[in-house]
Length: 638
Ligand code: DGT
Ligand code: CA
Ligand code: CA
Ligand code: ZN
Image (cartoon, rainbow, N blue to C red; front, side, top):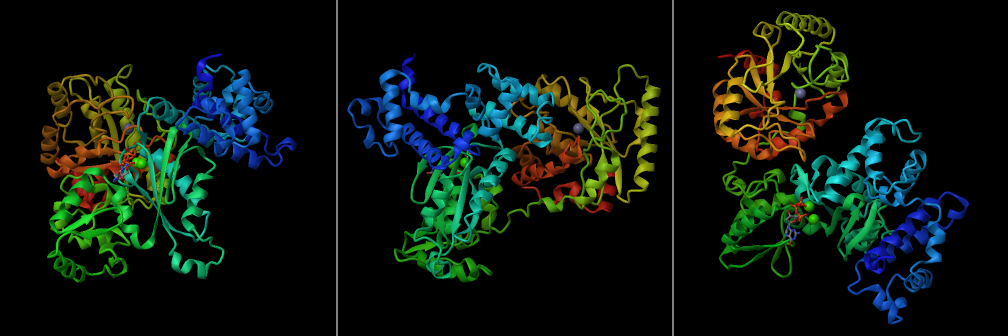
C-alpha cells in the first residue's frame, strides 16, 4: 500500500474506473439503469479531483457527506477505502476487469468497450507493455481483422496511440489534422442540441490553422434568445446552461476541468483539452475575434484601436476619447456592405459586433483571415486594403507529387494504387491535370542502361494508360539528392520525364554551408522544377536540415523552379514561416500531397492551410494555374 493511494487524484481515478466498469455492464442484464450511476461516479470523480483540500482530511472530520456530488452510496465506499485501504463496494463493481482496460482508455479513440475487447481478445494483461503491445498489433495489421474493428479503426488506433504518446505522455502539441478531427466530433455532437445553437466556430490556434495545436477552442453562437422562447417554446429559460450542460455530458469527456455559466473546459482521452465559450448573437463577432488570437495580433490590434480612441475587449469596443466619436460616425457608413454586421451601440457606450468583418471595418481595416493573425504586418496591410487574396482548396487544380504502384525498382516505397486509380480520384477532386512522381530506380544493382530502359518503359506505359483517361498529365519523377548534390538518375533517363522533383532522403546532418551547396547543385539541372519537402523535417521525429534559405529562394526565383509545400501530415514542409519569407522574395510554390495511396490525395487541405498561413495567393502557387500556363512554366528551362 503506498501513501498516494489516498490522494485526491488516486481516489478520483478509482471513482472514474468504477464509472467505466458500469459503462462496460451497459447492454447486459446487470447493466440496467446504469446511466445514473455512471454520471454520479463521473461527477464525484471531477469534484474530488478539483477539491482544494485533501478528501481524507474531510473524511476524518466526518464531513464527507457535505462534499457536493458525494452521496451516501459513493460516500460509504470512500469511507471503507480510507478505513481499510480497500473497498468491497468498489471492488465488487470492478471485479473481472483487467487493469489494462483502464490504461487503454486513456488512448484517444478507444472507449471502454473497445478496450475490453482488445484486452480480452489479444490477452493484453501486462500493464508495463500494454500500450506498446497494442501498437505492435496495430502496425502488423492484426487489429483490422478483429470483428467490429477494420482497417479504418486500425488507422485510428495508430493515430490515437501517437497522440497519446506525444501529447499526453510527453506534453507535445498535437497535429492540426488530429485536433480538427476531434473538434469535428465535438461539433457534430453539440449540433444535436438543435436550434438553440445558431453556429459553432473554432477559435485559437485551430482556427488560425497552426500546424500543431495545444488545446481545442470552440465558440457557440446562441440563438437569439429574445425570440427563441416565442418561436421554440421547448427552449428552456437559460439556453447558455442548456448548451454548457450538453457539452459537459459529451461522451468523449474524461474529466471536467472547469464549468461556468457561459464557458466550460473538459479533458478528453489523450489529455486533449477542449474549451467552449457561448455568446449571444449581438456580441459574437467580438468574442470570435478576441479568442481567435493570436496573442500578438490582439495586442497589436488593441494598440491600433487605442490610437483611434477605442478600447477593445471580448465584449466590444468602448470609446475612450471624446473626439473619436467622429471617427465612429464617419467610418461606419464609409464601409460598404457591412449592414448585416453593423455595430450596435449598447447602453454603456460599448459598441458590439455581430461578426468580425464589422469589427475590423469599424477600425477602418479590411477583413484579416485568421491564418494571417500572427502579429507580423497584417494590420498594416489591412489598413491600406492590401491583405492577400489567400488561396483555398478549391483553387487547387492538380497534384504533382503522387506515387503509384508502378514498379520501377526504386529503393524507396512504392504507392498502393495504380495510375488509373489515382487518376480517377483526381477527377473526383475536379482536378484539371496531374503529375506522377514515383521514386527513382535504385542505383545499386542496376546498370545505367537498365535504369534508362526502366524509365523509357514507364513513359510508354503511362502514355498508353493515360490515353484512355482524358485527364492532362505530366510525367514526373522524385529523385534523391545524393550527399554530393548529384542526382540519383543517369542523364540519359531525363528525356523520359516532363519534370523532376528533387528531395533529400538521406545524409541530413550536414552543416549549413555544405547543405546549401548540395541543394543548389541538385537544383542546377534544368529538368528540375520542384524542390520536394525542402527542409526534410518529420514532425515530432526529425528536425529540418540547416540551409541558407535566402540562397535557395534566389536560385529558384532565377530559374523558374518552385518549392514544394508537402501536405503529408508527417511533414508539412515547407513550414509556414519559410513559405512567407519565400513569397516575399517572389518564390513560386506547389502544394502537393506526396500521396502513396488514393486516400492520401485528401491531404491537400493540410498544405493549403500552410500556404494560407504563408500568405500565398493563386499567382504564387503553380498548381492553381490554368493548364496552358503550367505547361508553359514547365517547359521553361535555362
Ligand atoms: P494553443 O492552444 O497553444 O495551440 O494556442 P492558442 O492560440 O489556441 O491559445 P489558447 O488556447 O491559450 O487561447 C486561445 C486564444 O484566446 C489565444 O490565441 C488568444 C486569446 N486570448 C485572449 N485573451 C486571453 C486570455 O486571457 N487567456 C487565454 N488563454 N487566451 C486569451
Ligand atoms: Ca487553443
Ligand atoms: Ca484554450
Ligand atoms: Zn515522395
